[in-house]
Amino acid sequence: MTHPYYLGSPQWSDPKWNTQLPAGGNPLERYSQVLNTVEGNTTFYATPSLAQCSQWRTQVPDDFRFLFKFPRAISHDQLLAGPTSEINQFLDIIAPLEDVLGPFLLQLPAAFGPEHLDRLWRFIDALPEPLTCAVEVRHAAFFSKGDAEKS
Image (cartoon, rainbow, N blue to C red; front, side, top):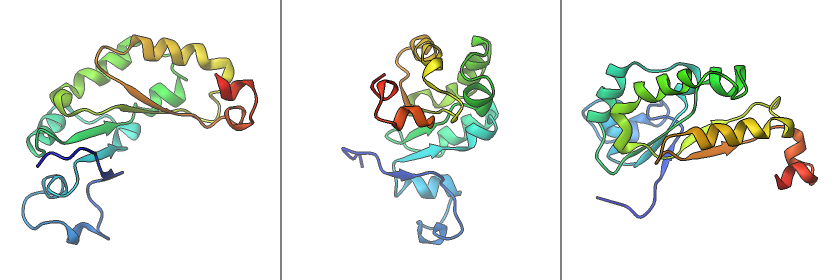
């Protein structure tokens, strides 16, 4: 059943509530019978394999959405200044999920301040269409009610 909204959690398997999901199948299949999106936090720490992405695609319906985080190496270690090849490699690996991708989550570290905004704009502008991105900033300047917050 298609819903006019997306509702999910940061993970599809948790021992505390996993028993509340429908029986049978693997955790992602069971999860996708109840919720229609998930935050792919795992991609922040490690990039899945192409085979894993292909497998995930077979486990969810067409109206399901994955919201993957960009890898830490791109957002935190390189502060979005790394080579385009790393971004393209990540996108190539998750390509089997292309039709069930929601917005990407770009979590920026506290070290990413207003002086780095040009990098953010270049990064977002370089994403291939139709990819979109939700950005989480953490630098204190973005919350101090000053000019940086208006950027």
